[in-house]
Length: 530
Image 1 (tube, rainbow, N blue to C red):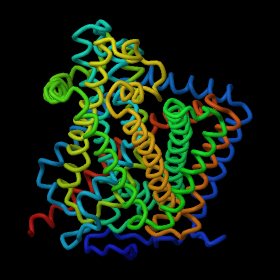
Image 2: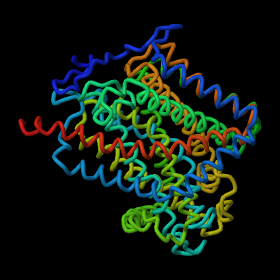
Image 3: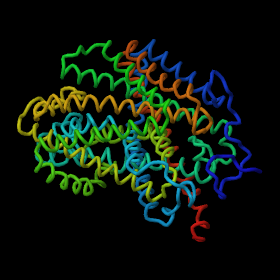
Image 4: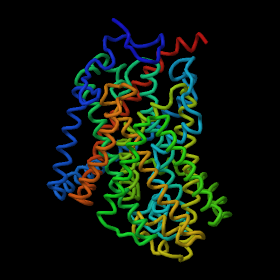
């Protein structure tokens, strides 16, 4: 037997006959993994064609499948998310947390700030721009139910609005990403396996991961990633268009949405051509700088004292209600739990191959403990600050009868702009918000393209430029085709499809926990020698 050849040498690699790229073929300037690339591309074409030709039927069927998954497997989603979180916290505390990704001599490729900027922009990004206002208002007004079945518009509903929002965007969500990211990084950098999802299952499947078991895992990851990104790009075009219409009277038309998608795709292509260092890193740093600027402005011109007081209360209430919100048995708010919590866990799981692999790609040289702290704790604290600044400002407007938010949610895509409308410097902050939305889209698209490149090239870290361009353009094309041909019904079908993949991937996630545990435990002899 011989070791897999991989650019990160370590004497504790798994022994396997597989050579990186041995199943690849070179065509049209691309270096592609034969079964995974062509099957993925074919399935994407068929799915998009069906959604385009029969948008209403596809939307109905896939939404039925999504509802069935959520209604019948709520216990599975809820318990799995909590188990994954407990696993991550245990790893942080155990001696296994000293293991360094890439071996003792490995050095990080990026500064801590750039590293965090990239992982945060890929993991949450655009969602925080809209749901940090819309979600607390929804929980306060009873739009889709209230957490723990509290009376809408009550003081208690206001108190729980932000902790419940943080519950969906905090520790549980990032634990899902952390397990996938840590698994892929560990098996790539410490065990010499390719940077593809299949590699995380080597301790369980062995060399069978190089056959159809592995092909199916990687194809599913490609589909979940491309559909999730295309859905976000399509819905994001709707949101950005709504913002431009609200601010400047720009026509809220299909043509405007097409221009936005084409613009985002163009800059995403430029970014992926420049690669991680010259493209994604720079855009992510710009992203975080713009987000910090907007956050600071809203903090200063908003109810600053109430925000500071509410931030501490929100953090405390979040921790106090972590167990009640995670319990799925005899819940008085089953409608809310299904419509929000279970939906979120399925959505985060469906995004985990993309976000997890991207985090793995940029995390060489970090210890397991450092990785988990940066991927689990830091984003949760940042989300607490972000949600408090925007959410408390929004709740205050709603409670005091100011503007549209006093009536509840009109359009989710306009919620942030409705907040900014009644704060000083409206034009500037709203324009900054629109720019931030667009830059977030670009960073999601380019980081997603790099992930798909890696999977469809058999785990190679530096796919040829034409291959990077292909997937970045493909994301934009899917969003455009669905926007033009099927509108909201086709995009809804795509989102429902992505959510439905969350069910099998949750099982994959739990298997990944077992596999990662076996892999990390195999490093114990090395830890004892230190």
